[in-house]
Length: 122
Image 1 (cartoon, rainbow, N blue to C red):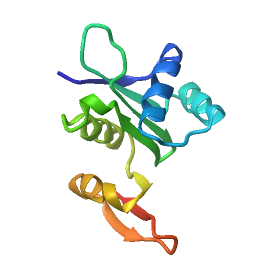
Image 2 (image 1 turned 120 degrees about the horizontal axis):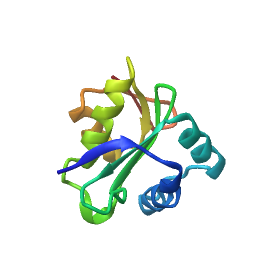
Image 3 (image 1 turned 60 degrees about the horizontal axis):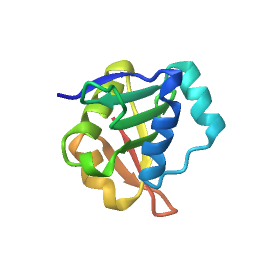
Image 4 (image 1 turned 60 degrees about the vertical axis):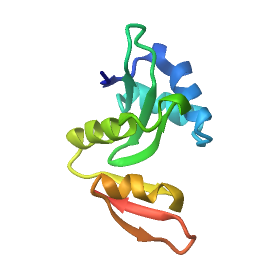
């Protein structure tokens, strides 16, 4: 069973590891600010409480969502986005075309930007 909770400062290294493992870029200062502001959610699934996935917000913008490779396809990313949606009136996301099906399945309205990236609103 996956549990979603607000990240603690002690989760910083594990969150960084999950984000780096997904090849996402997230400045260390930005991660620190998001942790301090309570804008980082983590998904845990076992007794250790170690993050299996993480979502970083900046207001209503999803800055990053990532799940450990061996845990992908198990609904963890979906659970993180749904938990973020419960905390915000709307969510914005910018992402690359290969992950469009993920965002579309979550009800995001998607448009293509001039740079080829996609923008989603829910």
